[in-house]
Length: 295
Image (cartoon, rainbow, N blue to C red):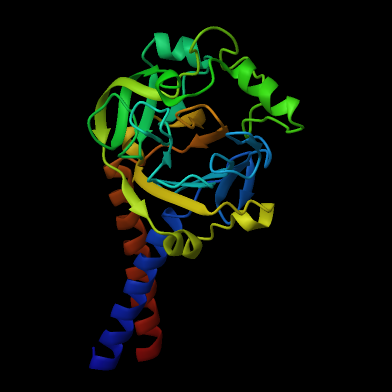
C-alpha cells in the first residue's frame, strides 16, 4: 500500500468515526416548543412585579430553554434579573436573587414530590438563599420558601391577584398561573429554594456567545430580556424521562416552568460497541475501495 493509499484509508476511517460520534450526539426532540434542538417555554411578558411596576421590570422572566445531547443537559434563562441579584433594603441580605431550578420526574405535584424527597434541583446562583453550600446539581431534595425574608409574596394567589389588578397576565411558562401543580394558598407556601439535598454533580457556566453558537434564539419569540444566563451539567446526575422544571425569583415576583423529557444516557458498553461496529464497517468500506483501485 503506497503512502497516498494509506492516507486515503486513514482519512476515510477518521471521517466515518467522527460522523458516527456527531450522529450520536445530536439533540433529542421533545413534544414542546422546539427550535434548533432547544425546547422553549415562554412566560408572560407583563407579570413581573418590581415595586409598583408590573411587567418589564427587574423581575420579569421571559423564557427558559433546555437542550440535550447524549450525555449533557444545557439550560438557558432569559430575564431582566442578573446573577448579581436585585438590591432591596427590605430583604434580609439586602439582595434578592433567583431561587433554585427544580426538576420533578415523579409525575406527582410539587408538594407531594417534595414530601417524598423525590425532587432534583440545580443551584446556579451562588449569591442566593439556598440551603445547600455550593452551586451544582442535587438529588433527594426538599424545598423551602424564602419569600418572607425577601420581602415577597405570601402565596401564589396573592401574586396572581396583584398582577391581574394592574392589568397584567400572570403565567408560569408551560404551566397556568393557577395550575394545581403548585400550592396556591396558605402562608409562605411558595417553595422556591433548596432546603436540603445530596450533591450529585457540578454545573458549567455558558456564555451568551456559546449559547448563540448552539442555536439558542429567544428573540424568535420576542423574548428579549436584558439577561441570558446559561449552564450545563452531566445528565447522569438526573433520571431520564418526562419532567416538570420550575424556577421562582426569591421573592416570588415572577416564575417560569417548562415540561420536557430527558433521553437515557447510553451505557458505556453500548457507546463503545456502537463505535466499534461503525469503525469496523468504515474499515471494511475503505479496504474494498483500495482493492477496486488496485484492480
